[in-house]
Image 1 (spheres, helix red, strand yellow):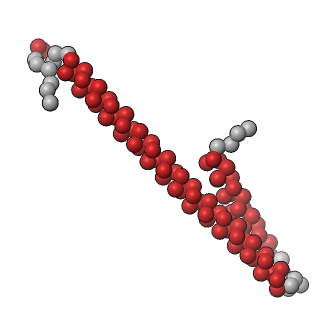
Image 2 (tube, one colour):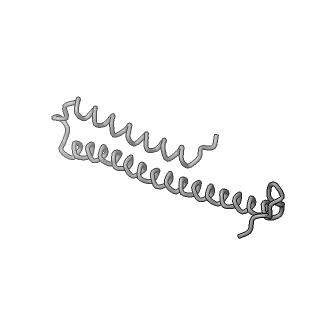
Image 3 (cartoon, helix red, strand yellow):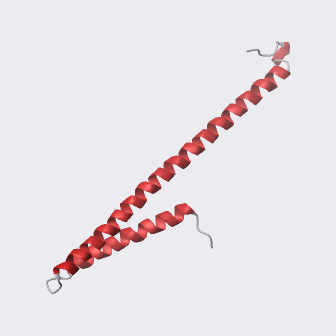
Amino acid sequence: MKLNAKFRRRLFGAFCLGAAGVMLVVGETNPSSGTSPGAFIGYWLACFGFASFAIAVAVLDLRAVRREAREVQRNLLADALQEIEAEKRRRQATPGRNGSAPLKD
């Protein structure tokens, strides 16, 4: 099963956010008085790292979605302009309604 980039990006972001959330809950509910200060700092740095990765992935996803929307908008505009030009050529090639002259520029 081949996953596209958008799905992988969102899956990784959800994993990072979930891991940070679980670490937050576990860190707040379990007393860490018996651990060393280095383990305490390392644990919360890892939690912060997961949250930072989730934010970074969200920003990258936002940029990708904006880029895709711009491409779709440009394609729609190009298609609309081509349809307008085709309609203009068609009207110039055929006489107007009720015997009137064809449209000119």
